Image 1: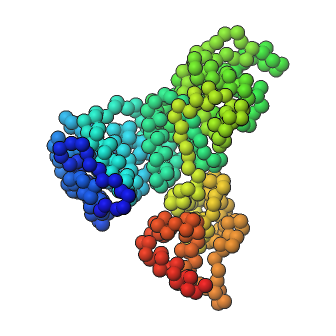
Image 2: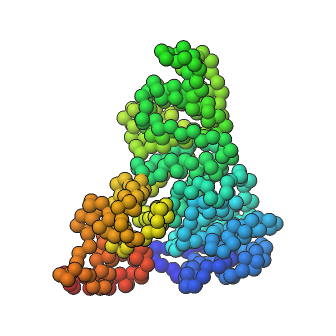
Length: 451
């Protein structure tokens, strides 16, 4: 299906690109197949991993596009053993960080979230065809899929983060994690370390914003006995403790100019000197730094060294704010409720309020709101009345004179709240409501007639 503005992929080769579409069920299969054919591809559809591998053995197959839901990793491992393995792209409506990292470390060409538009598919076809005969690189080992479990989300923004995270884990390069407070930057750092070859060694973390310059210096680099009043014994610093592993520096934008120079030496030469010592010690440390501030602005203002900024920002990971990935909120609520000491559910009005909030405190704020609701809810279901007053505001559910909303009124109010949360974007609101766009338009139109 060639929509306006969608590029049609026309490879500079004598034949059309060929791919195998595996185990995408229902209407999604036909939609995806039609879109790919409209982009100029020959598509062979199968529901059997064995058949997909048999087809992939043909030199003419440029890509295997496989649903994650069935034997995706097993297919990937078997495809790699072929004499000329084709690129394998795993797709799903829901992607976790564990699966994305495991798939990419296992040699997947990419991991994508359904539904995919024509522009994404055209780019994918071009990349896969051009790299048809490329062999997957040897990757470092990674831990089991149940660790770490802190990162949540299957939105497009989070899947993009997972892909970058997986690639960062394959290297020893410094990483700069940027994002607002409460987005989970420390969880990202933990994941990069856990999926790297340094995982058996320690991950040492310190918040640079909570300590004075003198105390932070001794914490990082240690001191020798007698270096200052009260230094009764020699103490190793955190950089030395992280030797062979990873050092996570949270709120890196808060460190003083003098400590910036010392940290730059660690990155350039791998050397540290304890406070009061005359000798340098070599260390092998991967540095991951995080900040909620715009470091490039601090560089322009002369408050952060430009050379240190570029040394830290070899790989940059940006953690999206929660307001930009509202699709992930129900999943997070479910996970937070699982931690409760009793079974709890949440009703639709309360969920609508949570979807409609801007979440300035991001995931940390959502977690605290759910924890508060769990503590205050007397029954088995969290309602709007159990949520903080600031969340209710003008969006609190209205009632009829009899005190009960009709089904149509409830549907209208709920849809309008979700639509406001999506900034008026009907397509996004329809996805959140699990209805099609035309149904949402009818609901909105009926609401306008009654106002």
